[in-house]
Image (cartoon, rainbow, N blue to C red; front, side, top):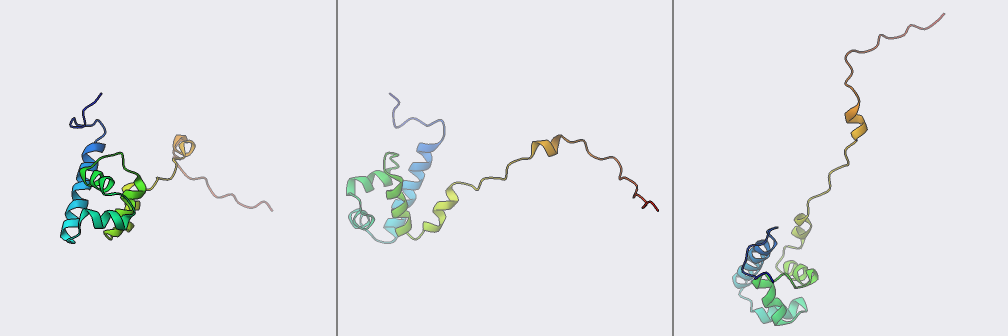
Amino acid sequence: MVSKKTASIYGDREALARAGGRVRALRLQKNQTQASVARLAGTSIPTYQKLEAGDGTIALGVFARVIAMMGFADRLGDVVPEAEPPVDFKALMKPERQRARRAREGKS
């Protein structure tokens, strides 16, 4: 079993801990209690405490509601970058043209 204190390979634990710390700082800046934020988010106090602690077992919906309550709902979509258009490999494989064709003269 891997300890929760060890660093994660993907950086997910560190990112969740950073996000939880920021949520806590925003809550304190707004002078709100954990109980009031949990109630407004429709979750329990222990679940909210897990969010602030960076516990990855809370539901994404709870995290989204808390972020929205803090006034940052518009930033949730920025977590995942937009997909880039697919690459046309056939077009990339075509040899580059060296010269243009001469214009054809009409037959009379």
